[in-house]
Image (cartoon, rainbow, N blue to C red; front, side, top):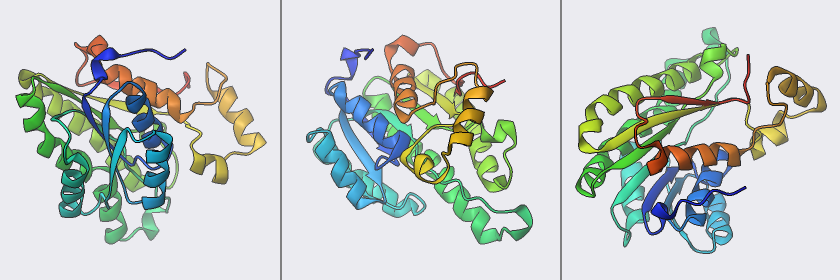
Length: 249
């Protein structure tokens, strides 16, 4: 069942990492509600297909989120001609897997530059627009991985835990301006990449057994959570982490 959110009709929404996976599903979900979506990603071909699938309801710009100046320039290009931003979904990220002892400082810094820095950079740039427009919502994508201590993901854990800290700090500072800030921590989501490189019959059986709800989590499930957190239905929700993992115990 698709839930309708008429309030998003005509509103400007920014989504990062929008060419595939959770970001793509989120961009499409907001576009389906009538929002004007500015989609950012480094994958030009993925963005082009997103525009086609969204039937022109999405504006895009190619950006490496690890480069703050380039990211902000791309944001300006994507927002050209659109209204003030009311919703920001910070989704872009990578899960670079390598052992702690094999990790270089450059590896560490790049993981944080992709997974954590853009959340700060874009939130800081767009907060004035939200405030002047009467308020807004920021949704940051974290992960349950750092809660479950998955192996060989130390820098990823640090970034995703940092997103929770950033979310709570921004909620405190921005609440008086009418801006709510929440995070989503997904569990095992079957994105295109996961399906191609991770999913096996054994992985599926293990995943279903771990969860209280024995269904595979799809990008669209996370997108629906983002819609709700950004909506007036969650008007008194801020500084929270919404875990969407099918009930892993």
